[in-house]
Image (tube, rainbow, N blue to C red; front, side, top):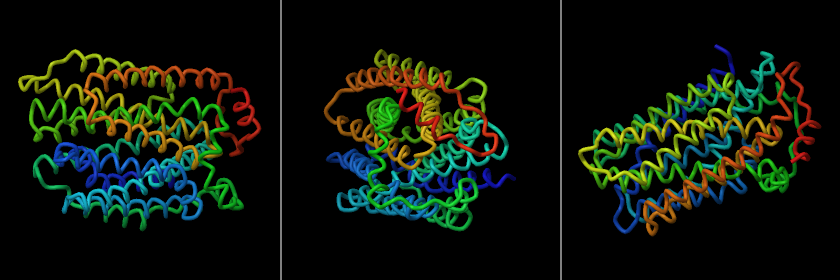
Length: 415
């Protein structure tokens, strides 16, 4: 097996183990801990912590600890949150939510950076388009990762009222520590030794990247991603599934979402090299727009069991577009500033979550759906502008492993 692919699988199965424990907890927070709004508050606090850490921590930790060290350290926050749910109260859930939030942005930034470097490294060796290999690796990752939602929610549903064991989170940490190759070694092989940038330069690199106008246009992509995921995990599970069917069906509906998401992720990673990412973005947009309009018109009832699963399946089909293509897009467009780019991605995605959970308690469902419709429309307009500019600067296959930074700067100035 190719070494790059082996490392992708190690990361993927590590996240599978970690989020098997965490995924079921997240989808049940707003329903299981509804008294005095504890569940929604915990989720809002979690993504508030993620929002704060996204501004500074990812580039700094990745530079100092490497991707492997950052992943291991950040995973410990998820394990702490799982333990906190065994003794759920304001004094356990809120502190562990903060801890998890602070580690979430570095965790996902390190994961995305790692897969991007692995994909580009393999592409240079094989003479392929970097974007195609990166897309394929993200597809493989999200196939394995999204299946964690199946197992986590299955445990929560079959043994309702109990949380998934935190033991799988500990196994995830051990797996990454034992089998994942440090990213610094891979970077040395593909790019050579680099002099570490100054501390303050690394700390502020997230904000420096806003000089690239492409990033300014693309911030709506992660913002919408956070909004729509927040709507599904908070509003759809509570206002639709719990109200009409009962809380015992939440896990099963989310299993349908995760399973569809996983299968579509690997499919999109494969077909994107033939269809291009624009076609997939159109598919995701049309699917979500259709779901939102249907939810505005639908009057849910207990006798419409299949419809609840249809909606979650379609939502997962569209979400797979945002997860695979957004990450690959950021990795390809900002290859020279991957850490800062993915930190920005997590910053705006976390903001989307915070907004979604923040207005959850005082806006009605109809208004929330109108907000999603408006943000999605604006997102696709901004994304379309970036694609129009990028279409004039086609990316060629890697021939000898050399990147032309002057071309990257020229693209940015044209914006």
